Length: 321
Image (cartoon, rainbow, N blue to C red; front, side):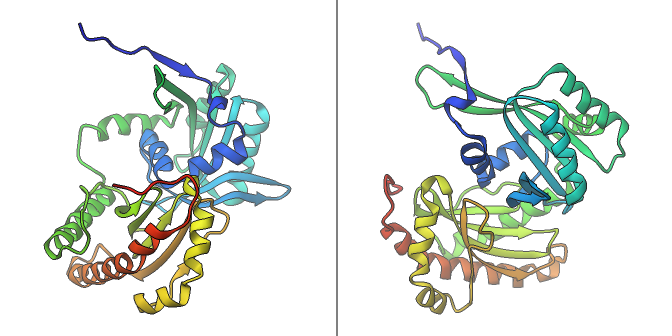
């Protein structure tokens, strides 16, 4: 008879010992922030880490890509307290954020009720989310994270239930159609060795042959640009990777034929090398032009970076098969 494993809870501090040094940088990485966004139905993009607000600093300042609104994320690897709630509200007021996300490993009933009360009595322009951070494991497997939403705006709670069984939002539908349109040409022209199925989000990743480093095509409908970046994850020694690639900056930019944005957000642990191009994806007549630009950049980036990324001297890393 087949056996099933037993699911067990793992203390979050067994995986993230320190909130500002371990958890916050982990959460700011693109795939992990996407998991949080999926839990609450928002598409998030990091603007900065430890953003100064007077004598204090907000753990993460993000932006909701569909609206452009700021999002304050306050992290707490412990039981919730008044101090973190007060700081989160202060950060949001100073930074003019429209969304507050409070993540903690344990929520008291009083603080859950406080968030519910704020959602019930605030204007519809402000949203408060309470996220219970959990880690789960089967036997000796790697722990899996779960963002358990324990408080959210009432209207969002209703619309989220509906959205799972109905059509995508206009922005996400536009993004999905764009990536399908782009992938079609990538496959036709064999620009890269392989492509993946598109998803309704603002990025589309392309493997570069090494774990933790990939190409990421971008389509930002709020800021009206498309682009491409080499994305280096902090957990795979992003700073060392960036430093080695920077040593060849002049040669790389000559191969690409354009000046690039090197580490445009130094406060982020993940590192990027990017290029952007103004584009209004709502104008379908311009799609052929936009696609040709992005295809051309993907081709140039892949030719210039793929072999260099494979040759990077990074400790404790293995090449992708």
